Image (cartoon, rainbow, N blue to C red; front, side):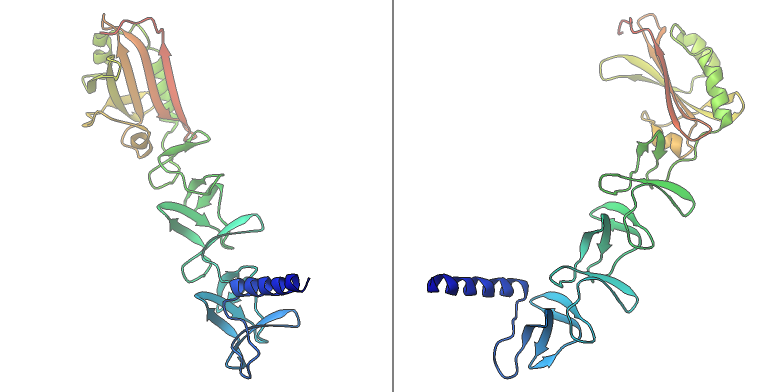
Length: 287
């Protein structure tokens, strides 16, 4: 029984040393941590410390009475977070169901912050934003899972550009042009008909399965008014529509008789939502 009591005393001492690297001894001018009245204090050569204390490579904060603080701390206009052991935290901290970010000095950040290559936004109280957020003069979307800013991606049918801002591409004139195009761009359309309508501003391409198609990029200048652009690259996607390089992407796939078997058009409507229109009969023969 006596051996068991000694073992428990030793274990308790090891726990204290793990939480607080230096614990006060019984010497005349002690240094280290001391539990007094249920509160931890820190002594240096017998003198009780206040303010910031570095011990064992970790920072702690002691109030004007020398009591170790935990939780949120406002010091010189900056917010810090001290865990249940009083240790100043850095990096991400979850508190009250919300995430906060503390820099290398332990100071809580607000606004934009770049962490491991991903942008996050922290509101005026430091809480991580999730979902849609109006910032400055535009809409941004932050992952509901981890709060990371989406870029070159879609959320709820809206496109987030490379800088993360939701595109404002698309207007009533684009929608008017699309409705006009739908009336004559369809399966069965011949190459000569398409060239007579849109001109020669296309790319003659071959897909990964050997199918041949034409890519047109159109710029809309008014209701039902558009023209084909001489696009220099073979690839053209949502980012190019989003930044205004063009207003409509048209893809026309040809069968062996040079008739269209599939047509698609990508565009943004007057509410800036992305649309992908296509028509096809799927009974084609590859060239």
